[in-house]
Length: 96
Image 1 (cartoon, rainbow, N blue to C red):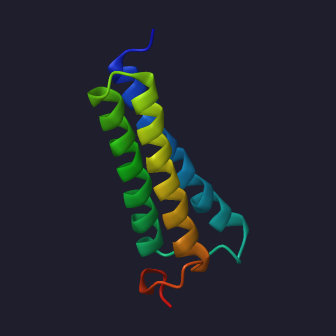
Image 2: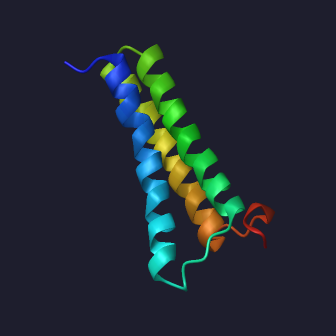
């Protein structure tokens, strides 16, 4: 059985690993060019999502409610990511 502490460590290490991917890619490719602001924005989004998921796992006891709320959280993450990347909705949030 996984303890709450182990679950939190795994949950918060996922954004850290995901942030290392562009940092490593920038060393080998000129086309991948992120600034500090890009890393901060992605870090806030990913660690915020991990925090919300951790909160959901601690506060809700039934598996059904956990799955529904985590699914909603991940959907919001994906839609935000897509909007920031390509501006699919055309909002001012994406810079259009």
